[in-house]
Image (cartoon, rainbow, N blue to C red; front, side):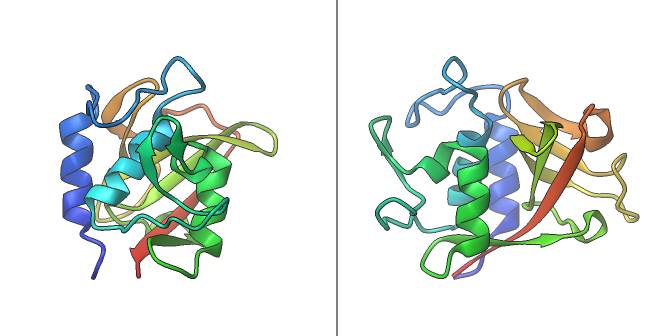
Length: 159
């Protein structure tokens, strides 16, 4: 099964400014951005990975993997996953496509926000990469509008 970037992006547009009742809203308890990104990946066809400790899944607020909601946990899962579900690889900004992920850091060495790419221009720059996210809900927001220290870009695919 291939990752359907269009479905992931359509989900992001639909839910960017509201919450899907099938998932807990983590806004008041650390932020909802990575939960939202995980929902987008799932909508794009990524299977849940129920591997204990290092998996990526959501059944309920009390039965979920840390990678479903945690920025660094999601990154670690994506770049190390060799089982079912989504996986990712670090790429330069200019290779981003809609449905890929950007994670940003506001403090040295700490990535704390996840964003889904919903559009890129013909020439991919921080001004033409448009994102959707929760925790300061946004859709079609230029990546360049974030005051970040650094970013990492992840190409997403599924097994």
